[in-house]
Amino acid sequence: MNVMSYAESVLSLLPPVVAIVLAILTRRVLVSLGLGIVAGILLLSDFSPLDACLLLGERVVALVWSDGAPNSWNLYILGFLVLLGMITALISASGAARAFADWARGRIRNKRDAQLLTLFLGCVVFIDDYFNSLVVGSIARPLTDRYYVSRAKLAYLLDSTAAPVCVISPVSSWGAYIIALIGGILASHGVSDTGHLAVFIQLIPMNFYAIFALAMLLCVVLFGLDVGAMRRHEQYAQRGNLYDETKGVPPGSNVELPEEGSGKVAGLFVPIGVLVLATVSFMIGSGAMALADAGLPFSLIGAFEKTDVGASLFFGALLGLSATLALVLWQGMAPRLVKRASVQGARSMVPALYILLFAWTIAGIIGELGTGKYMASLAGGNLPFALLPALMFVLAGLTAFATGTSWGTFGIMLPIAADMAMGSHSAMMLPMLASVLAGAVFGDHCSPISDTTILSSTGASCHHIDHVLTQLPYALIVAFISLVGYTVMGVTESVWAGFGVASLTFVLAVLWLKHKSGARD
Image 1: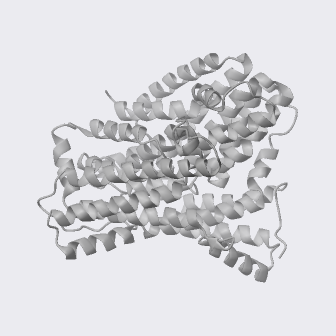
Image 2: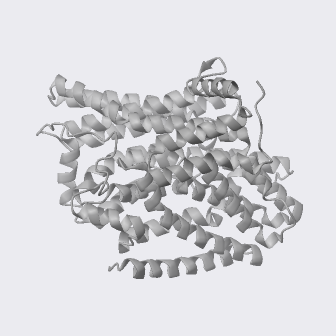
Image 3: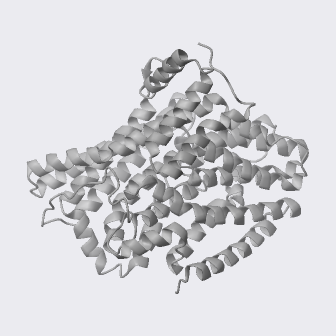
């Protein structure tokens, strides 16, 4: 069967546009993703109905079985979600979540403190964005519920501390991946006098979107900068509706489970602690084994570069679930309630599993269509080198938005940015690489088909499109601030000039938001 490529055609944008626009207009994510998949399959099969059906069947099977073997990454991630749903439900049924909320009441005095704690946890758990969104969501949700923080605000807190922290942390799955890409890029251009990690460290202050997204999140929490749809969600949360004024509880959320009256705070922190320690240990261990197999010396960065993230998350969650079961049974929870909570916790993740499977399918189809390559081709032309960092930021953002993947955008756009810099003005290489990293995270934040966005919604138990629409104004404002910074940096060829002007723009934006929201300290 011949599969068509549209890497040089604007038609490659049709499936993501269909999925994204319909998802926002209809709020029916699965239907929208499904229609985007159908559009993509028809394009790939040159509108042959029979070939389209065969191709779709192949892509669906490839979700679980690929190249003659199980698709371990997908299966491990799906298993991780199910196990985490079971852990969360068991913690809730044991009364540990309520006990944690009661314990925190004497220490976390108000809504602002609850959000600050969530932000802090999001910055501390920087190992992986999936892990961040789901685990921090499980810990913070009882507390933010106690102080009537909307689930949309919680999803924003999770999403804006996941990728922005991971992308500037060398000791994370993201950092290791980026360092590996940078190593290949530098080698291809004959640059050997600077270490790959040193280059990554130099990129951190140039990653304006990540830095100012975190700063904006802090200001939103401290000053109550709730605007647009977020303001409405927060107002309804104060009336006791944490989800949505018209939709009620999002699909897949746990219905009320009976709670044990003897729950302890340890019932929350012990399982989560085991989960975190086990996952990190598996990540380092699997990376160390891969290094040994390749005959390479052990290093922490090297281990994270070679680690098997999916397997580490799954087996870490398996140990976390074992610890949870042992603890709740030791505390005397009735076996019937243990079974009920476990089944209900697994079922609560089913909507997220469906969305993730659909998102993976459309992402694969978009990749075959050549959407990312088409977006990258727009970077051609004879533009002044001073505008290149800003241009790469915009194109990386659009590519990540259309494809739903930061990592895929890194892989496509970073080499192109380096080639353009070396072909025009080599001193701009690092600013252009940083602008790609920043733009990819921005586009990922805005995209309804991004797996990170989906899992942030899942971690917060929030309607997916509610999260997209409430986060969008803040993401666009930070993107504008970043664009100003990259333009100034390109014109002046000074990182600190760009950072300084971006910082000034950030202050003005916060003051405007404060006026717009009518917030008071």
